[in-house]
Image (tube, rainbow, N blue to C red; front, top):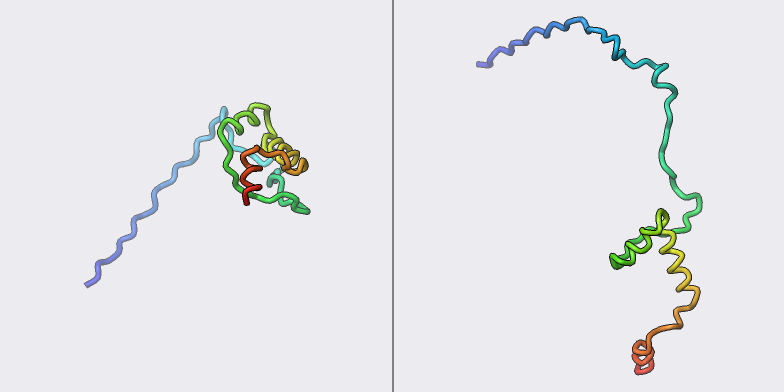
Length: 99
């Protein structure tokens, strides 16, 4: 045999006490809604999201120069790329010549 379900009577709600020092917020107090969504997507993606492992001292050097350290790392890598990577160690040159 099923047990009967007994509903509890609702709790009595007392009238809210209005605190003069802490009034409830009104629409006038809040002002108009402001939507902030961040930068958003690039119109024409020019950069690729990637992961690279760098030595801690290299990261510390670029971060110590202030905000924008990732852009400075990108600029440093671009300068090396534009030089053509022709300057290498003599050990690397010997290994290439041995092939």
